[in-house]
Length: 280
Ligand SMILES: Nc1ncnc2c1ncn2[C@@H]1O[C@H](COP(=O)(O)OP(=O)(O)OP(=O)(O)O)[C@@H](O)[C@H]1O
Image 1 (cartoon, rainbow, N blue to C red):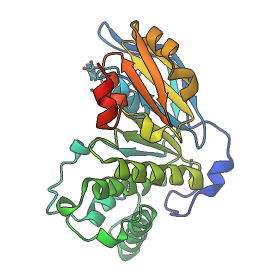
Image 2 (cartoon, protein in one colour):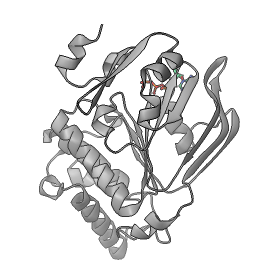
Image 3 (spheres, rainbow, N blue to C red):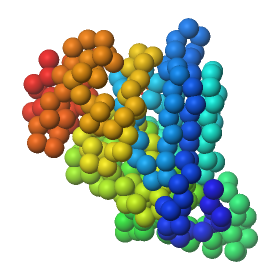
């Protein structure tokens, strides 16, 4: 846990600690008869980047909800830090995008914490917001209404919002959805820079592994109640995914990219149209 969660510093000291930020032990989650996973053992270390992959409905968001304390496991145990930052799916915002400025959006991440409305509280809030905006290079457009900003700029603000609490663990729910490749790279670079500077652990739900492939330490791949955990080289193979899906899946490496052919929604692992076109 941070010694002082109001400290907007780099938190570099955390990078040297080796205690995991989350440990699933024989974890099970089921809704009625529907088992999303069972006997799941996973330890998320400091500064580790974990990608959560799987077809629609396989349990990726439910996995984040367990970490957030919104869902209780139906078996096994989970120990997790309470210093969590969360980047929700993009459509989760309720605020009117023309009435809310970028800096207001980031400020929502600060509200509800310990600062009151006195002068010191307001100054502290502003410092934290400014610091978070600077971390994602969003200062220049911080006073514009969110509604006029590009998808990439909005997503950088959401990253900033999640960083205001100086999290040890940053949960990202499909933060690359509907971004072009340049902005995808930018968001991934921001998140990766944060984990390198502060030792923040990352759990990153995504349909596309390629944008995060260079930075991923571990993959949790969920399919129909089963899962595999390992490095991308271990999990993203023809043999492993065919076994997991229970059908023929082919994984091909094209330059530095993975192309997955087969599986329920394998096309989601491809980013560019030329690659998508070769999927059946
Ligand atoms: N609170 C709940 N009660 C009952 N069933 C639920 C609940 N939450 C999730 N589920 C079910 O669990 C399954 C997994 O849902 P989840 O949203 O975690 O999948 P996902 O992998 O994130 O899907 P997507 O890729 O479509 O976002 C779905 O069948 C969903 O209907």
